[in-house]
Image 1: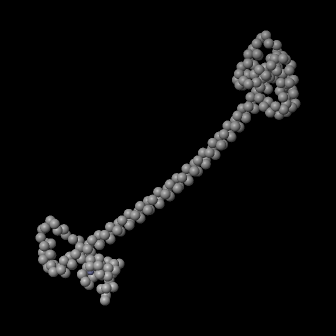
Image 2: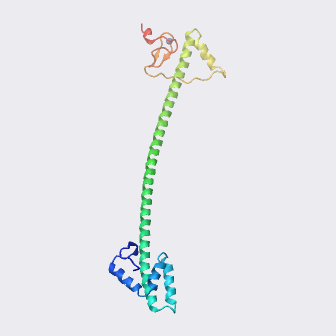
Image 3: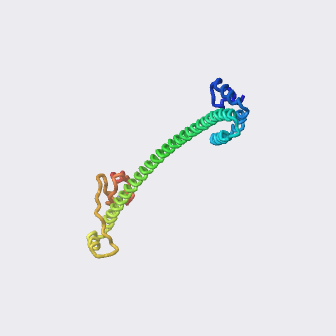
Length: 216
Ligand SMILES: [Zn+2]
């Protein structure tokens, strides 16, 4: 018996079909020989071998028929093997697709995190810039107040402010024109030294007297 009824690789499912093909193959000794000799070849090679047998004028007709049945059995076996291979390829492709999907999801998640991080950094930088601008504006105001207080103090110590005004009008390259000073509401003038202080100061920045001392 060439074909085994319980061989899953044979490609047949019906025992009666297997029995009939075995019977036809066994009508000549060449039939089973053809089946076993070529069991590992590809379909193209099997067909070429059958063609050579059919063209052989010395070969009896019964041998040719038996080999043709053997060729049919090999064809079924080949189809089953191809089906198994295709199934494995489909499985492999599905696994690849699943891997690619999860990689794409991970990338999208990374991209979202990166974008959020960039946005946070941008906001932080904008906040720092805002603070620096505020500090700079405050420093400019303090400098202007300091200039103003300095002029007042000079006048207080006996130098004629009108003389200083006249000096300032002289074209002296060492003197620069000062910007006008604007006082904010709440700024206070020290009664001791006449320096103008910011509202939030509790001690005169110029003479260092505390504000509570000054109200005594
Ligand atoms: Zn003072």
